[in-house]
Length: 90
Image 1 (spheres, rainbow, N blue to C red):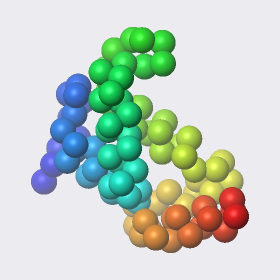
Image 2: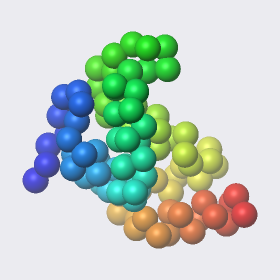
Image 3: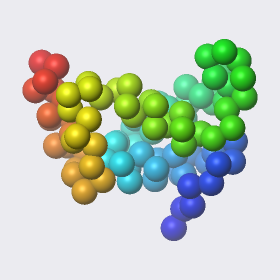
């Protein structure tokens, strides 16, 4: 079992597990990881990120339209989440 520690930089496996636990694909987790890794785990303002899970939470909230955030349920599959988004956005 992978622990979700606050260590910066996190391990890619921990990021993938965190995203999958929230019903988000590991491809999206990889996008998140590579984005922040390329920025040396710094915020938009250039400050060091202290807790990557807060950034991951914000990433997930920003990728999902406001009216479909209720679909972010770890019990739901990734496919149903993305189908719901496609229907709303499509």
